[in-house]
Amino acid sequence: MIEVSKKCIGCTKCVPVCPFAAINMIDKKAVMNEACTLCGACVQVCPVQAITITREEASAKDFSGYRGVWVYVQLDEAGEKGHAKKIKPVTFELLSAGRRLADELKEDLCAVVLTDKNHGYEKDLGAYGADKVYMVEHDELFEYNTDIFSTVIVGLVNRHKPSAMLYGATIQGRDLAPRVASTLYVGLTADCTALAIKDGLLLQSRPAFGGNIMADILAPNSRPQMSTVRPNVMKMAEPVLGRTAVVVRESAKLDKSLRRVKVLERKLDHGAGAVKIENANIIVSGGRGMKTREKFKQLEELSKLLGGVVGASRAAVDLGFKEKTHQVGQSGTTVSPKLYLSFGISGAVQHIVGMKASDVIISVNKDPNAPIFNVAKYGIVGDAHEIVPKLIEALRKN
Ligand code: FAD
Ligand code: SF4
Ligand code: SF4
Image (tube, rainbow, N blue to C red; front, side, top):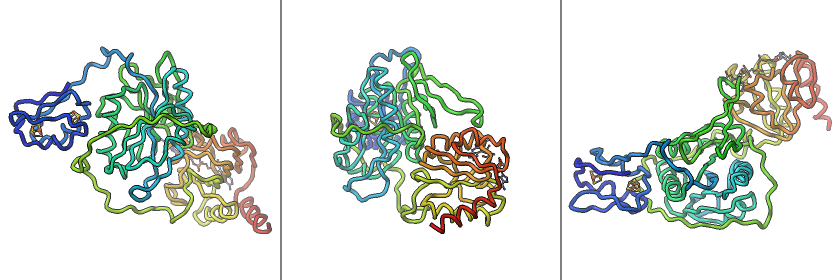
């Protein structure tokens, strides 16, 4: 329920920020109409805190009206206004997982696209399993903005009432999902590594206590049940070409004043055109066992010869052998390349969780009992400082 108290001074600041045209000024007081979705945007701008939103006790709610598994569609950040943007692969991974969940719940799988212009995104989204695409097109959605995107999503959720919503645990998803969750006053499970259905609820599993246990989390008292999942954690299904989704066009009245943060400039910290570790097909990773920065540099050469990207354990990053953006693992990046080569990495659970989905793992460690050998397809017990130069030499000859 939304209420405007006597404190209202009739300043009208709340009127333009309401994306749903739900505020009328009557007798110099703000009055909300039935279009209000409880998105909360007006609460933030009121200079005298005259607006309050009261939410029902979650446990007293009837959730039978909440249906549908939603996936937030993340588009590439770069790109000019009006131009087609690529859909981030994590979206397809989430749709693949979401399809399984929606089938089990016998509900629709829906994708949510916020963009300045639709470029036929429903084709790919449908091919990866979406039944429906909620499409919001507006000039103000040309680039990601926390205030604007969260306001639109909260409005859509309040209007259509999905039972679950999934986001990629990307920089954008990690910014957006908590904002939506706090506005809706629902829970959010970050960095899930497995999703399933249990007694009609979304069973969200994620590592806890430094990765030493897996926690299973249920949210029985709020809707939607919300999770973020890192890229490369869920397997992407094969697309069914020609299968498209039904597009449901949604309108939102968005005003610039909602945008409290303005992006002035974007600077990429990777070399222009460099392949990011999460997208690499081949990763050559090193750990503390590489001993020095100079010796670690040999991995750069090996990776170049193989056409791969260098990865590192957290210990190697802490020792300054490689930048944090190359760290693989629980507090780094989750990867699933075709080939993962590791040198001098012990295989702590926090490292394994970030690379175990790789197609083929080859590990070199001088300790035959190193836990990395438990996940490696091929293990070589030996000295990395002897093996790496030999590999470089052999590859140079080819
Ligand atoms: P070590 O464990 O010290 O292993 C070095 C290995 O090199 C040993 O197995 C040794 O036998 C071998 N070795 C030594 N010399 C040679 C040689 N000449 N040739 C071949 N092998 C040799 N870690 C991550 O990697 N990623 C994360 O994201 C991450 N997140 C974490 C989050 C939390 C909350 C916590 C608590 C820890 C996290 N860690 C993470 C740290 C993790 O627990 C380990 O400490 C770390 O992975 C160890 O790195 P390492 O294998 O390089 O070093
Ligand atoms: Fe306020 Fe949002 Fe309701 Fe508009 S829709 S009145 S901005 S809570
Ligand atoms: Fe009233 Fe606050 Fe709206 Fe101003 S912003 S009209 S004070 S409710």
